[in-house]
Amino acid sequence: MNKMSRFVAVLAAASFLAASSLAHAKDPQRVPRRLSSVGDSITEAINAEEYNIFNPINPNHWASWANGYHGFWEWLLGRTNVHSHNQRISSAFGSWWRKNYMEAVSGADSYDIPQQMSQSVAHAADYVTVFMGHNDVCQNTFAEIPTDAQFEANVRAGLDELKAGLPNGATIYVVGIVDIYKLYQLGDQLTSLGFIDCRLIWATTLFGIFPCGTMLNPLNSEADRLYTRSRNIAFNQILQNLVAEYNANDPHHYYEYTDEAFNYDFVPSQVSGFDCFHPSAEGQKELARVTWEAGPFSAY
Image 1 (cartoon, rainbow, N blue to C red):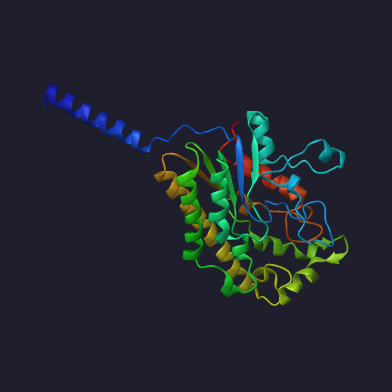
Image 2: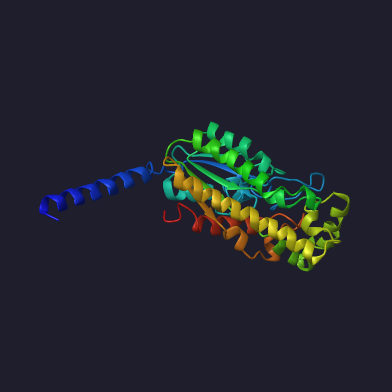
């Protein structure tokens, strides 16, 4: 090969590499000033710290792992500072132009993802946290658990909303579903209001009163519970696969996934002392910590 041929070959290779780099380059990542959380009762921090016997679904938004806050009144009332993503963003990037939107609603499942994500788009979020799927796993009967195809279609419809509507450079952070089997394993150590055995409360799944019969129903066999856990794991795999797909194919947004919530081993003090089901304020604090440390802005 003569010098001219070599030069042409090198130039062609350089042009190809440059084109490849441009094809995969992403828009600059935006500072996460506008937080929007997509989720269910966990993100709403239901019964995390303060309870109401007349309202068994009591939001404690100050204790949310994603949107929590700790101002003068929270300090005065002795409420737990969970050091949420919202707080960590303000600490890392400042409070100027900050917004803190909670789209999460107690009882939501994957069928609600597109609607919640459309709200994230309407709020022009820079940073969207997604912690959803617990109510897909937690059903009254096994037949009610969505199929893989149904779950994937629901999540994909929501991600398409974000892809089409979020500002360029926005970040979508998907947190895998908590390992609900681990909650069941804590049962003999949990009490409600300090004296009621949580397994007695869970027994009301027999009548559809308490959620998550697919895991907590006392008539379930170990094989039943392991089947439910397998659906939990399968849904997380779908979430992880979708995040990888969208991150590879969308040059305008950043997508990340973490299994830290699934892998975390909660202890009794980190489960609500009222409903025996949701994370307590201490549990929310740990969720905030492990997900932030594994997340897209942990270096700040």
